[in-house]
Amino acid sequence: MESSYYRTIKDMEEYVSVVDVYDSAALIGKDFEYLIEQYGVEAVTDLMPKVIKVLEQLEFLAAKSEKENDELLELVSTIKRLQSEKEERAKEKARYEQELEQIEESYRSETKDLCQMVSNLQEQNRKLKSRLHENTSGQEAADEKTQEDLQVIQTLKETVTKQRGQIKGLQTEIKQKDNEVDSMQNQLAKLVRTNQHLQITSSSFKSETNQLLAEHRHLQNTLQEKDRQIISIRDKISLSEKSQQQDSSDGNPSSNIIGQVVGDVKDPENPRFTLNELKDVLTERNTLKSKLIEIEEELSYYKAKASEAEGSGNASWQEEELASGPTDLEASYTGDVQGPINKEPWEKLNPNAKPIESGIRKFFKFLGFENKSQQHRSDRRTNTRIGSKTRAS
Image (tube, rainbow, N blue to C red):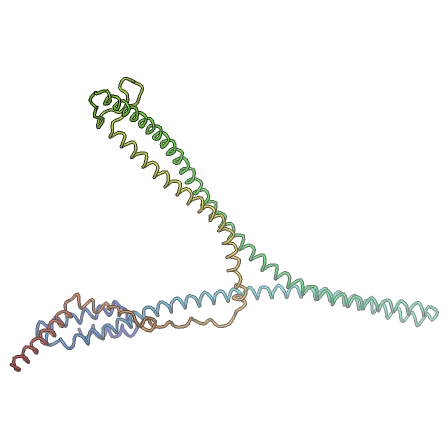
């Protein structure tokens, strides 16, 4: 038992869970049972509340440790994900820089060609100057040609400088266009998914609406048929009552129509209904009316829901467009990753709330130790009161 105790201590140094606390509580409960069997309840009455209090504190700390470990694992996974995103952005940045170097290299080669052209022109200029010295007669013409060559060289230099500025502007514009294309592709994919969902919802609403309309028409026809039957029955009843009144005025005995056939017996084409059948027809008519009202309400609900689903497409697209705003700021942030602020304890946030009974206390209640201890303390207080009353008397 001592070796298992030291092994438990070694495991607790690494990690203590609520299950480990419950296992320890079970072992302590067995020890309490042994002590109660050997020495009685009085031996553990004062010790048991203290042990339960310590185990409750250990349970609270173990639960808090598990929660903090879960949060720590979640934060570590978040940090790894952000670090991987940062590395991917660094790779993209390196790729863009490499492409930029290639473009600059091509511009350098073009600039080198232009410089070679300038050197050739300068060489030609020197040759022209030598010819000018040799041919003094054509001095004025040579001076004009030299001036034109210098102007051409200056124009070429200005053109090269302007092209460099244009190239830099085009590079920035290309980057902006690439970002816009990516965002538009994401928005297009979201809109396609939203459209597919709305089409599926609309088709289901249409099928349900058609089914409800068919049932509505069937119920209307049935209700109209029942109304016609009720009208014919009422007409026959009124005719029967008139005939009975005439018979009673003539002195003939009145016939009892309760449970009998309503209508003219001599006319074989008239429908014959008993009073119970008439009640059944009226009840069925009322049931059909209530069912028809329910179907009309359900039909209006589905129509309103379908219109809301159509309107939610544009709203969801606007919300997604607003939600995609801070992504550029998040992409530009390359600093160290920091975790969230620690949460306040539950007791500080809820000072007026009732304390929650811990699992340790429930466990000891289940074993019956706490009830035994409380009963023993109450018996001891009762005996003390009886002894004091006896001494007083």
